[in-house]
Every structure is written in structure tokens, then in C-alpha cells.
Length: 411
Image (cartoon, rainbow, N blue to C red; front, side, top):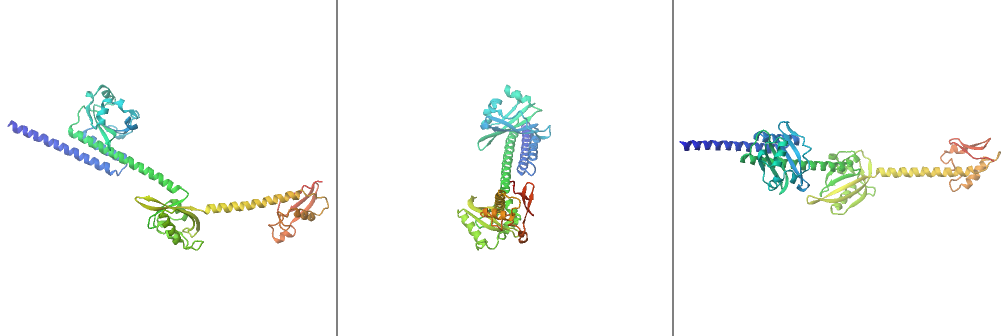
């Protein structure tokens, strides 16, 4: 009878343990699904995953620590508290701590891949003092190794009772620690990639040069905002109607599409192409561009890249410079002319026309007689463009459309 009773007790205990194992396994699976799905923000996802483990094993706090500086220091990177409602800010005092000095007796154990599973009262004096300063009564520390490198550890805390976690609970905590670290690493990689992509997109779309990518079939794959703005279109339209961004013929008589495709083929063969080419916007405006084509290797095969520089600004600037130069030359010549005129000495009664003819004779290198000062006036104005008068100080020479030019006619 005693044997039967003992057997029944053993069966019940086995059944309870199996049910406990199943409950822990189900919780761990749910945690994995939550952490791997990551449909919400990462903090919410992490909080939900940790809460499952904390509820299942009646944990109070959990912290994730990362090794730094080649393993010589460590810092708290995530902190969860049941009492405070979930994820909280990390403790600023738990940053860049000297690993070997902070808990020297745990260093070897964790570095060998073994967890620390202990009540605080049985810990060495230094470790016990540190744990009690945080109100911890029991602790389970799970080391994390990624590709045989000591990545960090997860600290599970019980602040209400002293206990050593049983085998099943220990296995669950080790698995949970690995899931948490994997989720964190995945999140950091995604964040780094997103940041890198955002950086590239900013450069890609903010440079003042059009940029496009084409495949080995000479089909466009992508282009930047600058190129779309240049032609007054959007990406889908530009990619799908690429041929419409060219006039039928180039100024040299070549067919535009034949010429550009030949250039693209040469670029894909490794021959860098730099040339001027006439393009056309959606509104039909002709745009002179400088195009550079080359190739890069991507996923095992070559693709073409094209840089398109809008020469309209340069050409308009050059035209403005040319016009300003012409205006400046005219003004300099006029100034030189008036300087020579002002040097003429005029007496009362002297014929101003005679004086003017003499001055013009000296200035043949600037203007012909018909061009002097009045070269921009129409025929009617040229008949009698100048008037003169004697003043107390001398003669004035006045043009009806210009300012008074003082002849400096002092005797």
C-alpha cells in the first residue's frame, strides 16, 4: 500500500512538473512570437515579451547589460520593472563599469558560459553588498555569447523572496535571455540600416546633379529627386517614359534614342562616357545637359549609373557675364571719350561743333564720328543731339537724353 501511495505521489509530481514545463515552454514560444513579429515599436515589443517571463516566473526586475571596450567594461542598456510598470530609463550609475572589479567572482563563471543562480545571502561579501543596495534577494544572471564572443548578460531579479531557480526555470531564463539579446541585436541592425539608408537617401536626393541607375537591358531602375525636378515629372513617369525625355534628333543630326543607348552600352562595357546631350522636359523645354555614364558591380553583375548635370544655369550665367562685359566695355569707352573731350579748351564764341569734330578725330580708336555718345540713338535723334551754352564758369555740353557733361572749360 505504501509503495502504491509513493508511486501515485511520484506520478502527481511528474505530472505537475510536466505541466509546469509545458507552461514555461508555451510562455517562451509566445515570447518568441512577440519578439520576432515586432509589429509595434521596439520598446513596446520588448516590454510585452519581458512581461510574459516575469509573470510566469514571478520576477520583479530585469536588466540587459552590454560588454564594452573589448570586455573590460559593461553598461546597462535596458531596464524593466514590474513595480514601475514596464520598461524604464536605465540607471546612469550603471554605465562603463569596470567588469573585473565590479563582481570579480562572477567574471570567470559568466565568461565560461555558465549562469549565476543564487540567493543574495549566500553570495560573497562584495556581491552581496551590491545586490542588497538594489533590494535584490535572489538573482539569475544569464551570459550571452554571439558567434563565440561575450556579448553581455541578462540580470533576472527577485526582490521579494530568496530562492534558487529550479532546472526548468533556469533553462527557460537562459532561452529567454538569448531571445531578448537576439531581438535587441536585430533591432540595432535594423536601426543602423534605416539610419544608413536615410543618410544615403538624403545625399541621393539632395545633390544638385541628377542621378539614375539602369540595368544590363538598358532599362531604368531608379532615379533621384533632382532628376525628376529637372524634367518636371515623378519617378514612375520618368522611368516608364524615359524615351520621351529626348527630342527626336540631336543638334548633330543623330537620333537621340540610338545615340543614348549606344552610350549606355559602352558604359556597361566599362567605357566611361562624358558628353553633352539635349534632353526635353515634360513641358517640351529643351535642356542642354552634361551626362556622365559608368558602371558598378551589384549582386554579381554590372549595372549602369548616370549623372545628369543641367547646363542651363551655367549657360545663362555665361550669357549674363558676356552681356555685363559688353556693357562694361561701352561704359569704359564712353568714360575715356568724355575724359578726352573734357581736356579740350573752349573759348567764348568758339564753335562747339568744330571742337567736337576735333575731339572725335582724336578718338577714332573708340568710335567713328557718327558713333560718339549718340551711337544708341535713332536717326532722328542724331540730327541735333548736342546743345551747348556759355556759363560763368565755361561751356557746358549737354545731350538731351543724358546728364550734363562739364567740359571743364576754365581759361
